[in-house]
Image (cartoon, rainbow, N blue to C red; front, side, top):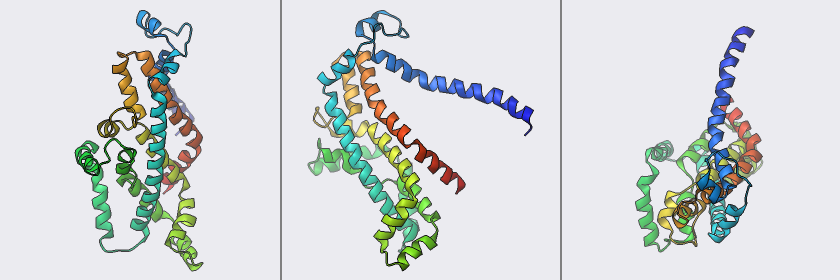
Length: 275
């Protein structure tokens, strides 16, 4: 490609990227502005008006609505699910990638085929199972359906584990390492970028989970962020300034986590692309 053609493509690509970024970021900026706007100003002035003056009242009101407890419950459930997802997914993926047992490949592809099944299809069976076990409206009902791995996670890790050089694993076995030692001291350190990316995906999906917590819990004791935010629209007669404050509080931890782990995510994309 000549320098002239590269310059011409840049004239088209960069404005398109800037336009896409503006379209993507504008709703977040408007939501942040609204969260610092008083209810009186929001109801009387144009939605795009800057908050004059900015107020923290919306954020202070979230405490009265029990939003702090929802944050703690969401963080706790997300942490437990993350630990379970990574632990069980690593073990299952290693078994499918490196261990020989009858029906291994058939079992793996049948399991991966469950990705085709919409999550809403399993809501009623899961609810009946939890209710029969007496776990409805409990912490364990929130975490048990999601902490034993997932088809996507196991598929991603299996493909990565298969790419790890066999000589590396054989050398560890010659040194007397058992299977669990190989996983902990060889496979996991060699897969850190993939595990970080998978962990971030798990955190985002569980932090934003809405349908299952809405179905399996009632009341405020085990209410998560998404359900608590939805409840604000009814409890406070759709005061959007308060809803936007709750949304901002829910988004900020995910943004901080993404920025902190961006180096590992970029590395995992590079490694995956090379393979």
